[in-house]
Image (tube, rainbow, N blue to C red):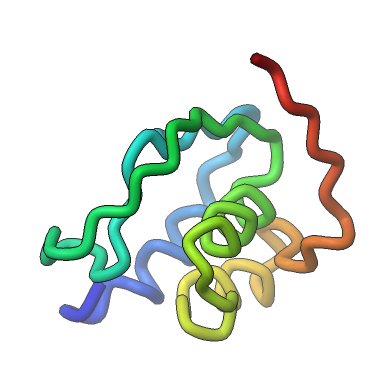
Length: 93
C-alpha cells in the first residue's frame, strides 16, 4: 500500500463486479504488509459491499476509514459505501 497501491486497488474494484467478498480476519495487522503488529480477531467476514466490508474490518482493528485511502477512493468511485451505519451485521457462531 505504501508503494502507491491505494488508487489502483480502488480503480480495479470499480471495473470488476463483486458479488461476494470474504475477508480473513482471523489475525489482522496494524502495519499492513510489514507484518509486525498482529491483532488476533478470530473472525471470517463476508459481505456484498467490498467497501463497507473493508470499512468494518478497519473499525475492528481500531482504524478510521480516513486512515486507509483506498476505502475512501473506492467509495468516491461508487464501488460501495464506507459509512458503517449502512451495515447490517449478522454474527454466526
